Length: 149
Image (cartoon, rainbow, N blue to C red; front, side, top):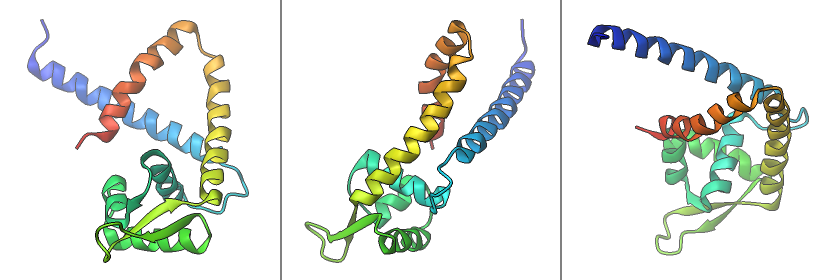
């Protein structure tokens, strides 16, 4: 029967393997971005957040992206200047600004996702049915890990 110490080492080993694998996959997916896309990964993440969640304030975006509000303000200013987001006054709090994707922002997000999804779908076709089934079961678990505090 495994001891607590052995389980701890096993979990630590799994953590290390997952960290390395997820980081490598992230880099590969980042490399599959369209070469003409001038936006940073951080800016694309903000556009993706708005796409998934709808209109948000700068503070809400900062919270979702786990960055400080001043940093998010800089990113949002650049996205606004590039025409990727539009600003409007908050419905109930006139001191706040709400951000929404512009048509250009939505098009950019969808094109970026389509390109990277196509790359990943091609790689998935090279796997066995059992391997794809394992990844289907793992995807929600990885999402839960990624969004936990």
